[in-house]
Image (tube, rainbow, N blue to C red; front, side):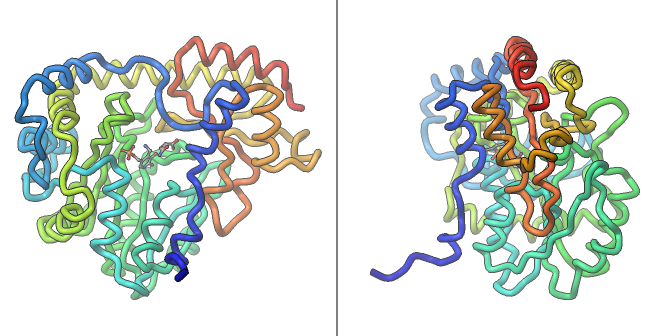
Length: 389
Ligand code: PMP
Ligand code: GLN
């Protein structure tokens, strides 16, 4: 039999599915995959129930998105960031995951170069390589997870088509500063490239860290494709409603790919998200404060158990360096993650899978704190049994 696409043969099972399955096998507390284990806002489920009574919402939605949702996403960008996006510049996608794939397929030609910051979200290299791109990596080095300016500049060339940028950043928890955004945007403009700005955690920033969409910077409106996700913002990851905001010419290209990828997104879920966007004024402050409490609780638990967690500026993840004792015993992120799941019954993510250039990822574990207080407190007890083993 003829072979399958060799590019596809290189793709591995997602670490998120793998760790959640392992957590089940070991009956472990699942702090690996990023999803809340507690009830999200009831207005989302109520809107779905309401939508289910309208037979029209049981049929295909318009290809670019439900007009009510496109309109409310336009309001969202205006109200939050004072940015104008018309309904010809927003496309509703099947989660940000589809947004990443269709943007890659719409923009990249075989042989183009793309830039990825490692640790990266796992779908970026897959989408880029399926589209035929050659990947250039820039490492965000711990403990601060800043890029090296020289390394970044060197990664760009006349062939650079697209930069994949995630801010707030999974898994490091970084929120990039205005100075960093300026530096990156100037390089994107200088090399006449596009940037895919993955802002699925736009509302999850803590303390004095503030999210600034890179499309707001001078000259970036026409080069930026921004992706967002309702699953994250409204605490229901199963919604799988995401979107892409981009200039009209880019949106046209994106929609052609989206049309023959999924055609359109679940209309009941779209209706629920459009309704949810009406609540952001009251909902977002509560959402941020709830996740901030969880962030601080996990930090306290980790410190108490003798770990030294990195600071989470945004997202619902915390990177934790492997204890020195574990490193001395020869542990890497993968072997320590296995120990933790078997001995302490806690599932985490080994971040080395998000790296291809450096070994940085082998020194950390990623913990997700989008979990109930009860589960986080259980972690406290379980971690004590492990104590820097
Ligand atoms: N980008 C990042 C950085 C993520 O963490 C995730 C996971 N939710 C996604 C994209 C995918 O989002 P969605 O579930 O909306 O497809
Ligand atoms: N974004 C989630 C995470 O980082 C996982 C998404 C998924 O499982 N596809 O954990």
